[in-house]
Length: 512
Ligand code: FAD
Image (cartoon, rainbow, N blue to C red; front, side, top):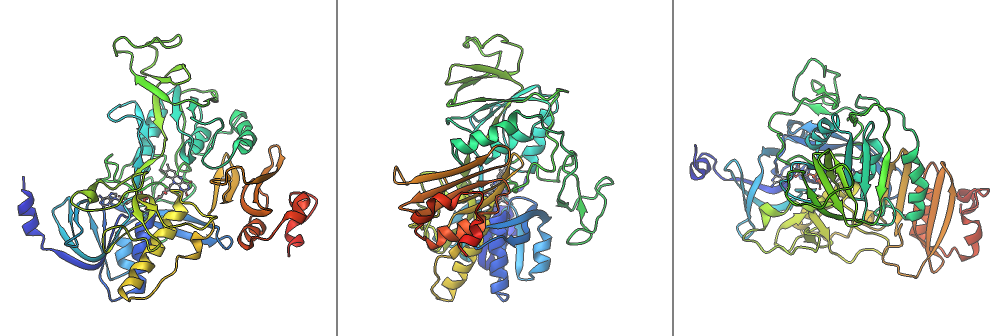
């Protein structure tokens, strides 16, 4: 039992010009930006997890749309690539912003000139300490989910964001009851019309999934079934994430980074039932209560009291028994370690407020990714959403702002914050969302144009004052670049409104 003062004594203060906390996509991108901009500066990355997340195969699809893969790599990869980077693998325990120092869980003191906090967010659980309620965030939590699913006959998924959408679609061999608080599924990403377009995909017979991961994940762990494939960094080993190998030290502490866009691809999400069981959506309801059969004097569930390990009572009056509940109701920014003794301004969602230089309210402290809340006056066509792409953009821009500040150079808000743009896949359809895709903040002051071909495509355009301000494109529409241009150049489309979604007109040629 080593006391913390003894541990401190064994670790003299380490000082860096730049310190970044968090080895997720925001933190790693920020470190890479700083390390390459300032090869002579010492850059420290403090991260709780043993692996970092790196962007791979980055592709600029259009002016604002980007696509990339994410690779989980040992942190040594970063130090090998950038000799001026030092990675400290430990969680930050406290921050003394006035002294420009941090303390880590393993007893180190770290000094900085400029600090960027990129500690991400954790799932907002419906209830704490309830063994039948799971959150999904990192590789370990998905593995736990997968393990419990393998013996489950019915699960309840609560939430209507991207994770819930993907999860209900991916699960096979298990009945899924999906509780959403809105009138339609996927409210965060699109409207009721798009939801209507997607619902048949949930009802259709879905083919079984392959058990093997489609993209490589990298681990330092050696194992016979992983085999060496000479991955990008050579000498590393891939593993098929469908297996149950856990990284040493990663435990279930929740310290890992959030998963990437194709997080479910490596996991076989199969329940205990042979036949496909389908999804039942419970609309416009929230969770009233979660209880187990042993709980005294509970309201009687429908018919099967005692048959299930846990019951969930919804505000629509229904009680559903299930094997376990997945809580996918959003995230809470990981700020706890940084708040005590400091004066951070927090946004309503609990994030560290940042200005258009990604600066928090504490001097020399920046923040990026899921942990921060963008509190600058945004462009009329942009909003923050806690997404992979924005984590990369913010980490990169925070690095540039930190560099500009030490060089006392001015820096403008980057163009990537001009237009909200996101590309993803839901229910096997390509989904592109642009600008005010859900007419957010427009009130009644907008007009919608919609084109829909069942099972093929759904196109929605949001117009304000005759100008395009947002779009939802589902399927292979090939319209994203043209629509992005029309949104960015704010051309008056009033004369073309009738032709805009005419499938017989090549809209790209039209506006060339
Ligand atoms: P994270 O990736 O969470 O990284 C945070 C890092 O900080 C971690 O390395 C952690 O170990 C470290 N850390 C935390 N606290 C401390 C501390 N006290 N001291 C030191 N280190 C600390 N986005 C999309 O765009 N598309 C998707 O399809 C998509 N699907 C998703 C599916 C799931 C299941 C989840 C959970 C998220 C998904 N997201 C998706 C969101 C996306 O993953 C996040 O927005 C993104 O990963 C945020 O990156 P980040 O770097 O800010 O945080």
